[in-house]
Length: 146
Image (cartoon, rainbow, N blue to C red; front, side, top):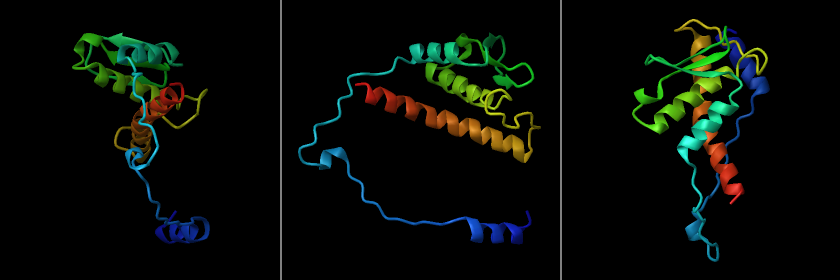
């Protein structure tokens, strides 16, 4: 779309809503018991669960490169002993799993893109946002079951 076409489309189809919402910390509410945080996630168990439940097979390779191959539908991750922390490894596994969700039999996104193109950048954004949001979802599920 041209700039003018995009502007016309947005004026017709996009509603901008601004609201003001007051929020409070639980400690500011009288009578509210403090949130119990006795249960925590074991990062190594979480990694094992990610690997086991990934629809794309995950292989550990002798390289520092990590990638998802849409042609083979396989995730390649650097060997575990090359990582500085379990958290960094887990984050990378999640990032590559997010790419794999675009596979044609899953969500069917256009994931075969050339580095530097807008579609490549869009796919990286999908993977990064998914990597950021997934732990929040896991945390909420854990809180729900406490």
